[in-house]
Length: 245
Image 1: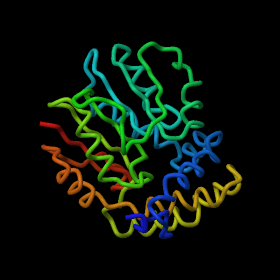
Image 2: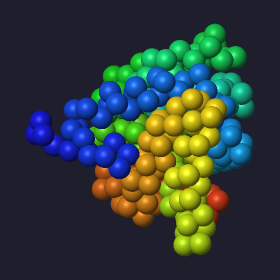
Image 3: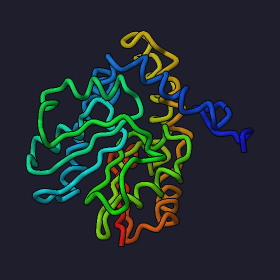
């Protein structure tokens, strides 16, 4: 078991090494993370996140967990439009979590920030109405464990949402996207964040992540029901959705 391998971008490493290596990457880029998201997506990440929140159909007094909350974009958007919902924002990276807390709503009594691992959540079974994981699942060492934890902590009838980079449907767009990922993103990372390697990892982590159908199959195998996938920008990003029945 100790010698099991996993992917870190395009490299093969020991599973036991990945979590720390990923967290080191995010620690290095924390202060430029929001700026880089804006530049790399030309601001489109804000559209994708708003679409996710619209899709969630949040109700008064919903109890929501935002996994891999990063600098708190999703958490803060939910709080902006649904002030009665309670949100647990979790991230394994302390620097990212601290940065998220310092945004405008960090004093809200409806938002709680917790440093923990998506593979082993410190919450009871059947706790949350909604589970969100946004641009985080591909960075997790044991994806299947994280999906099982998602289902465990959701209440019966609760809903699961994953916003993540995916695979364009059109081969032509996919070729353009691959060029952008492999050549342009590391260049932006080098000149804006002074960290080419971190954004080289970003590109590789996207390329190595399962496509829409494979991820949908994993979600089904976990036990979620009525699952579906919605593509944006021809599948450059997608939202996977499922319910705990």
